[in-house]
Length: 101
Image 1: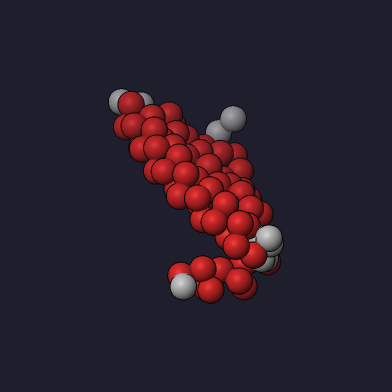
Image 2: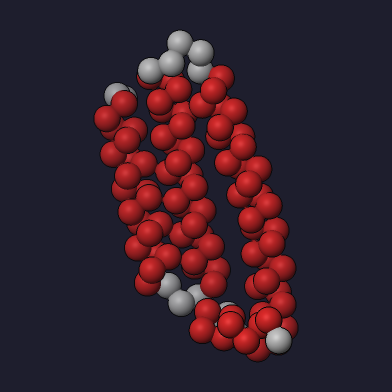
């Protein structure tokens, strides 16, 4: 596996995530798409650290940081999903703007 193969894989994952984020109306599908985009960034960090840097801990540290941010994001998103489902019995994103009342 070369650096170019890793970058192509990350690009494809990021593109699938962007497409899913734009075309999904279901909140859980949008969160999964965001997770795909963050995983593509992790692949980039790790592959650049593995193939170019003499010290490969930098890529691992960035990846751990992204995983921690993702865990916080998913906790907040789960709270929003539960609140939205309790109020509307639906997970349609168009009803999300009424959630702030």
